[in-house]
Image (cartoon, rainbow, N blue to C red; front, side, top):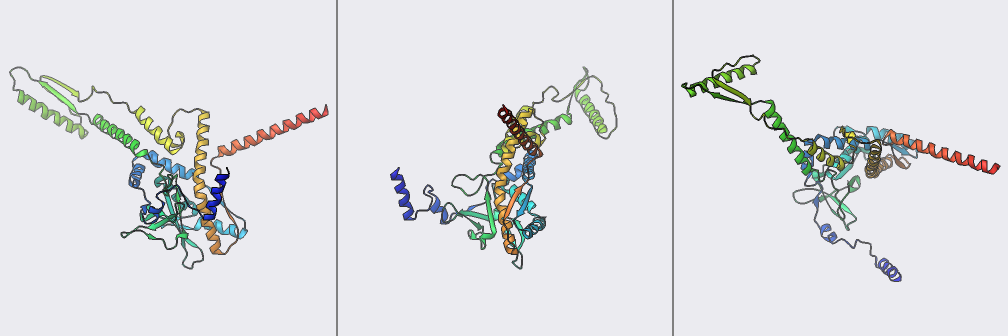
Length: 384
């Protein structure tokens, strides 16, 4: 006990204020920047395009997470922040702080990292625009110690430090221990999605073959007849009948002899895909954290299970909001400082769903009812 305390006091006197459990701190800090855009970024983009349920899940998460109010302790600052939230330009075509935070969160979910920049007005008296940076233009490396991360502008001769890093902010989603860049929410899904796409591709090929019927025409000519001539005649007449049917003309096919016509592959059974497709979709939905009914999947769930899924979703969205809150507060604080307005800024997020408010109201009503009954019982006992 006393030995451990002595060691701590010794470290304080020596000025030891650095990470001791990281071997890579020195090497990375001395010039080993890594691209901020993950190597699987193109794979994640292709995944969003190829599997609609993945894109729908990300959009649902972004929309459910949105919804906040800027609160300033000063009335003049409050009026300024209300205008700033609605009118601030975002990129080349967006407008509003809500639009910026939605794109910022989408970058976090897709690539695991997001970088934004505050662009000052030409006069320098305010924030002129917000810019969502392309991760492919940036690199990241450790600063003086593993607790710091430095963003660099990527270039052919190596990354160059940003001239005004105080105007840039960076967020990471669930980074690995000892790492600065985050992990994509889609991590682990490319393999499952490739299997799902393979099933859909096979289904398309099978339906194309079933829809465009192919026929096997078998002719047994009569004894003594020219078999080749009969076969050529039947083939010509059959082709003519099929071409006429393709043009909307009904034409009979007449043949002499023993002729049998059957559909190629009619005896084969179509492979059932419902079970494997659902198993893969269950894995994808579980990765996103969304209840299946939000994605249009009508899987049988009990009412209790649906409530539990809603509670889990609420927890997931709160974790995303905890990442966005410092970003929004930093933007608003700088906007107030540059405008010369006092006041503290807070971000008040809206309730995620009306169901949460109803359940909270019912809980308060139940507690008040219980307190009232307790008071009545105490009064009755006192009167005795």
